[in-house]
Image (cartoon, one colour):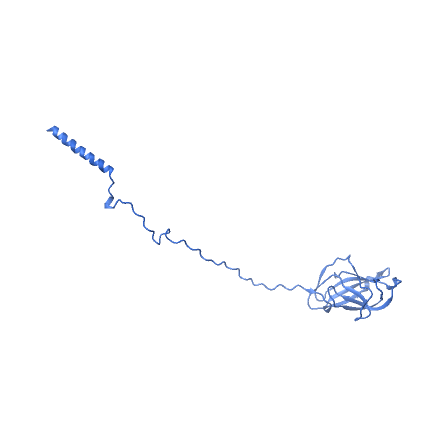
Length: 215
């Protein structure tokens, strides 16, 4: 009888062990009755970041700088012209060795500033409307050329040297009533009444002129 129980117990134990072995080798049961099949990937919803379309570049307009209200720059002064100048001479410079030195003075008689720069054209003439007599003044270049802004009423000067006509034995003397003055860069002229002897024949240079200087 004990032998039969032992056999029955061995059979029962062997069967239980076989069931446990089969359970260990088989798939584990899904908890709570959920299928053990792996979840299939679902199409991302439109709200998912990966599913949203790549954002298009937003058109931005670079603001252009607003136009700054600026006043127009003042115009540069024009060149001094004969129409807005008066001319005079000052002979207080004296003389030496048969020459007379005097200042040629140009004054701005206009209502606006003007620029005077360089050399005047100077000749002896028979009268205010007459033609020049003899050679015009030679430029004396030892004085540097400077740009001078003449305000209304202001003056600049250059030096005239007049050599006596009697110093030249071959001079054909002609009486001159004064100086014909051409301001720098101008074709109109001014007249200064100042009698001198002139030489009508070419090649004799009685006059020299320096560049204008500020007073």
